[in-house]
Amino acid sequence: MEATATTSKVLMFWLAVTCIAAVASAVAPLGSPVATQDLGGCIKSFVSIEGCVEAINDALRNKVYDGLKHECCTAITQLGDNCLPLLFPDQPVVPFILKAVCKLIEGDAPPPY
Image 1 (cartoon, one colour):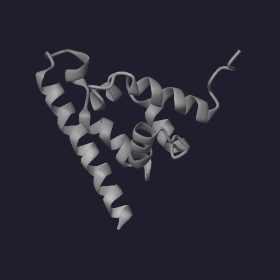
Image 2 (cartoon, one colour):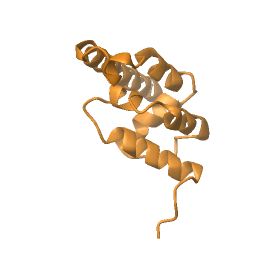
Image 3 (cartoon, one colour):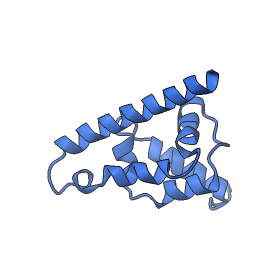
Image 4 (cartoon, helix red, strand yellow):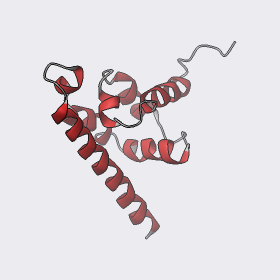
């Protein structure tokens, strides 16, 4: 029963993100990076990877990052610079957090010194 409730919360979260992103892209001026970004392509890159949506949700809500696996991080790091801000329009720091965590997970981060 708890898994169903968690799945429902995750789906509601992504539904809200999709609606906000759709409104943001509808009011963006023509020719702007946001207006030309494909929202469906942004979402598809996450949904096509099993557990990626849940891992991103867990990372952002609970600050638990070990659910972000290689495939999910690859999708995150390969997104265009306009895709994550489109998905998280009211959270400008999210793209930086997700990309930084994925670099650490993938071992691409420079040494801390």
